[in-house]
Image (cartoon, rainbow, N blue to C red; front, top):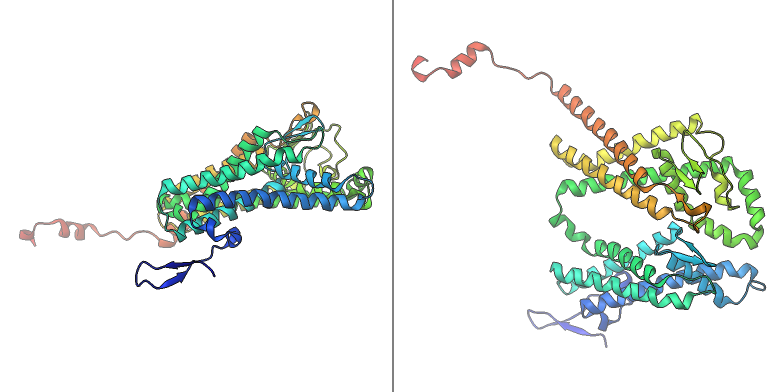
Length: 425
């Protein structure tokens, strides 16, 4: 028999409201307390990520199942990939590696967001509204997730390839805590955050989406243009089904390439090793690994006319999207300007974060610098959005002023009559 709860009025029994999201599989005993729900959802999130990583590892192992070792090693490799997605680093054959595929990080963010939403529903079910209780639940959930990742570290070790325990635990706690707590408190942010800040954050999200989408299209177009080079690299690392692991790794790193493309569009560009920097106006050439995705790197000296036009269009579109989303709900020009300022600042910080997450290092040699410079990309995006968005607001204000026409002023005799004392009328 399902558990029954009694209403506070009337004494009639009512069934407990089920929890959606991850909480659909939550046992009733865990949903009876916010703390229990936090521990459960955090642990389930860690297990979910590990299972997804293991599935990817097994899929990559299947084409060469007869010669590539035991399937347990494939499972361990998949779990290692999940731990690497926490952005805590990885030791690959004794070489420290900080570069992590962003698609894995996106999966972790989705899992954390669902876990935070499930915990928020449990909080609503128990009418928990206190800030302290919600923060405690979020911290406990993140700690449970980090503990789950820490338990997976020794299980996933493959000889000289392993994840460092302390960095993984810290990174998973911070990453999961930020995402899940934001998801948990999302419905309550509107009550404490000023309207222009929320509007600015919305505009920043739209602008960043434009930059990343434009960068992804630029990478896709470059892959098509350099298709022969990409195919040659694919044959070098293994063709057919034997090249499936490289293909999967390329797909996982596709968001990294999109972020690098966004930094290229913004202006600062990106690096693939020391001395190999790519911008719209200069291109450094050096020896690179035979990784098919790198076949899309620009050649020659600077961008051609089509790419330059695409860069201008993308920057203008990002600024206009930020301005429209940030100022659409404000009638006052001052409020719109404040919202745009928030949008530019948040977009710059977001681009810097994406550049940091999308880059990293492979060892301490030539490939110790990969990706865009976070501070350069962030400043460029913030400046471009501020310039375009403020220009848009200025044009809109001028159009409204012209549409109203000149103000009608009272004539001097009328002003004199109005200002005269009552005795003189």
